[in-house]
Length: 156
Image (cartoon, rainbow, N blue to C red; front, side):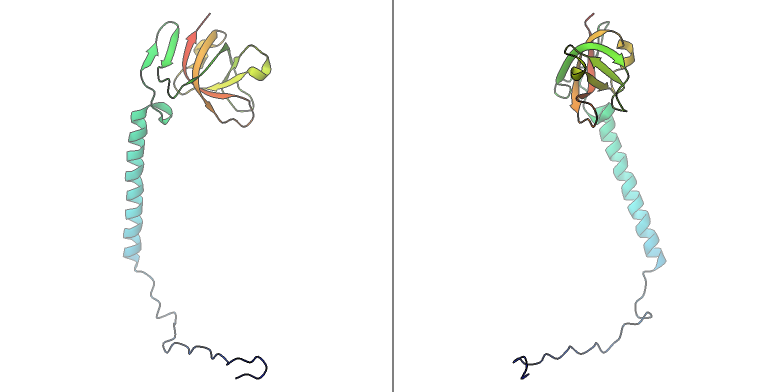
């Protein structure tokens, strides 16, 4: 017993009888590494192929677009589950600080402007016209309202 601490001293464990030397640790064989890398690359390619096929079946933007409408006054998707937000105004070209390719000028002044993008509808066809749009609101960094447009209907 240790008179100062009042406890029995602990002896350190004995070192292993076989020391580890650089020669005793063998690196994996090169063929195993090469085969492993090829398996990982192949698995990634197969996974990417199946993911791209499943998204292609859903249409542009990776979402189901439903039936498409194309008439003299209306163009786009009839999918009201995805494109459930609506707005009415005059469509103009140009976004704000990189957000949106077009904007919808609505009654109520600049604070009511909706900035728009679309992977389904060519918004350039409706510039200068009063329209009703259906879309999906997206998270914006610099504008109050950013919408992915799925359908456009000309009002005037």
